[in-house]
Image (cartoon, rainbow, N blue to C red):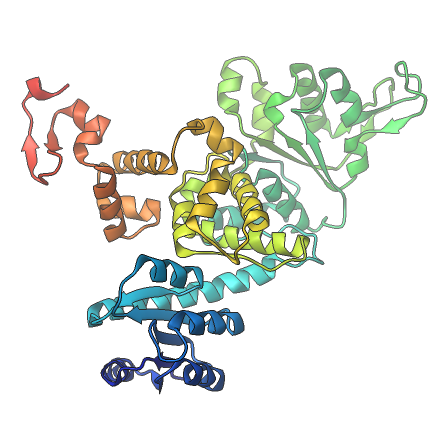
Length: 479
């Protein structure tokens, strides 16, 4: 089936040239010369794309755009105009235009936009399908959404280990979704109907850890007026997650090791061994190998836990997931607040894609909640996203209150360029941006190989700022 496009313009020359352009590319083409006729045409033929002139008789293109986006939220609109003004450009983007082109229309530019739109449409279909599967308010099981290669490997490991009761160690920075991985292992296992219990080792007082985990007998200590089962016993054949296992006191490490070896434990104040078949999953944001070397974590326990290891990647290494996760959090917030689902403007999304996310997924979720609740507009602008991001505690603590997002972006791009030895192709892949966008950013921030500490230290080659010429440096020139 051919794709349908509606072209709304009062210039016959534009209608004719655009009709030829799209028919050559095997599209069905429909045309209208004014706003009201254009709206009726769109309602009639239901196209996937509208080419819309900003200046139309009777009703402006912006008015038409607003009405079309209100009735057909998924409709893609490319705005064209002979009069370039910042105000109309900003307004068109805010109203949801896919792109904004200027007359006379460059065929190569239009072709590039159409190709990008076709790729975006496929990605959006996949994202909608993934979001529909992930966001089901009546289903309380965990759903992980991703299209990154690293997370696909995590999914494969989850599928393999969930069928057994093998011990799993999940490692990763704070906010990377370690508990969600643990829940996914449990709820995809044959024991999903059994309890899933979390024991946060970082929040419990040392003296209470043992009684919390193993339980206690009546009279075991002052205040123990009744026998109480611990979390391990209450978990039964389910899964118990030891969150932040690196914070577990050494004494409790030895007792946990004994349980892992025998499958038995004794309540505090008791003498009768109790068997447990609970599945053990541990998570940490600490370097356990370093803790073992420092004598703060038992080596034998480390290897008992490290039967299968899952590394939860930081968000900065899976940037392709940012649009998907951001949309999911906006949809989730709208459902919880019984409000309209808001969406990100292209500029706001670009801002999120270029940010380093030291707080990972948890920080992204908090920023999206703040944006959804505080933004008066249905489309989140770059300025609003920037304000919400600056309010993020992780942003403030990592960059200081006077640091701008442009400084953060410059620092991040320079770091990625350094790590890829200034190879633009690899840098673009890692940053998730096109080569022209990267070059524009480098020009904007004055980034040249001379900014690289590695280049300065090696003394091999430097690109003089503003010349674009590579100049070999003599050793005495290197600082």
